Length: 98
Image (cartoon, rainbow, N blue to C red; front, side, top):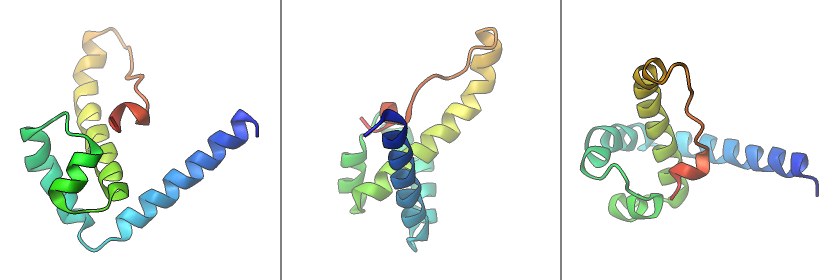
């Protein structure tokens, strides 16, 4: 299997996981709680620990952390980009899942 095909399949799986998480009834409430409480208490929380603490599926925890940390990095990126002379954030999704 080529790297391009593998990458496309991973992207399709990620998109399916995001769609599934967004369809969960409590997703928006969980996201707000993660943003306002959990990440302030434990900014380095792992997806597995978040899933256990909130009693939610690991897939939902992965999506929650990816989206909330992306949002935080976007808010901080404006300052960071200006301070660093235009350098962007070069982290990947895997950096957020540890």
